[in-house]
Length: 356
Length: 204
Image (cartoon, rainbow over all chains, first blue to last red; front, side, top):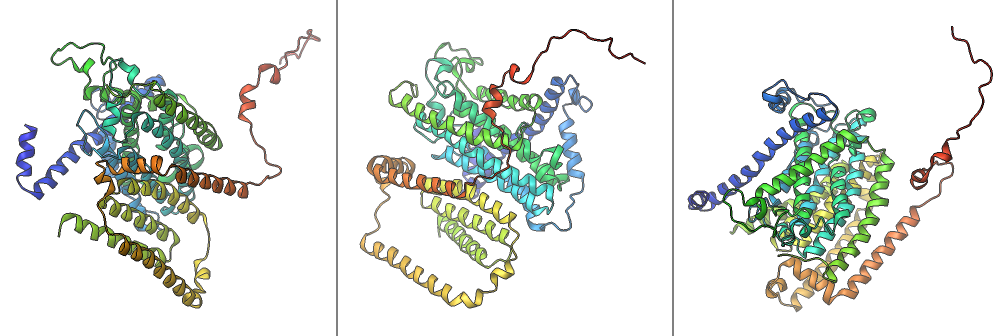
């Protein structure tokens, strides 16, 4: 059916191609937005359980519609602007924060061949796009013309740039092992018949931990949410934003969180590959994705990784600023540098099997 | 006019306009942002020329890291730029001269080379590899030694910059996390055994 639809669209020539591409983008972007809404509900629910509370439970069954109620509340609120703010940049900042976080979703492979943009330099492009998001934060902080916002933006910028280095190094390890920057090829390099021992999370376990913790720091989430730090700088860079402008920052932050979870899945946990790969070879309709791999595994693993975000938030106290910097520069980067050598040796002496 | 050509003109003109804004605009933050836009548009132009790695590396290194730090500094500065601009007309002839010499040199370098060496096919395409793969092969196989020397020079520069800015300040209190982690109960707490003397205080 999808093929027939594509052929019908492409028969229109260039306009059809544009229409088809927009349709593909919507097929990814709309579920991301809905997933963000549901993830907010799930976060509040999970943190509620961890705090022995109920969490949202009034709107809809189990409070499921709470997120949508919040969205509508934000949309109907007035967008205020400080009179001394830089008008253009003030309204541009949320958009700049949002666009890269959604653009990066085009690179995520959900299944074999199920990706919007199968780019050769996918991994680098991903890193480049996620690093662009910080501009939204800096501009929001500066253009608000508020001291709290400015301090939050400064913290966010320093933190993001610092942790990007550690994150880049973990990606270098993945590149060394897989020998490719294409995300689909990286997943296929983790295929094999030794189950989940074939995944890069096994030889690169410290790198997986560092990648995810750097991802938490990069998205400015607890325990690294110094950019918001309610107790000292109110709400950081978005203190002057209200209504839908604030909603855009919120959306960008959660889209980035989910993105980090998906990318961690792809890089270290074998993407759509099954943890039982190679152990069972039976053909059972409807159920054989459990051992043969399929998009369901990508989502299950990403759900697991995104749960870690909530777990961290509910359990860890916030880092102090110098401790964040120390962790990034003095702990993570040296470990990464050592593990790059380890990864190179693993590859050189053929201690890991790449691909099936 | 093909789609690529239209894209090229759009990106190139945006890059040129943004570059003009960098030097003409009054607000330093807007100037820095225009520089970001210039970098980004140039990366797009390079993508059109199928230099994927260079384009993404430009965005990653310059837009994603260098310009963030630059913006950081510019935002923190409280410089009255009207003072800086005072000598603009006085130094204009010198500036124009320097720019003209640079332009001629650039044209000579690019022009002479392009005259001498005819435009060849993309070597990556000829070798049947992606741009990325070809670059890797060239850097790490054919030109490994120059590449390593360049890396060494950059590292030396980095260390020099760090040592130049490193200064010992007196009177600062620094935590040593290693010692904090290694601390034992005995270092902090002394349990004293003593007999109960006296009756203690009488409650109200």
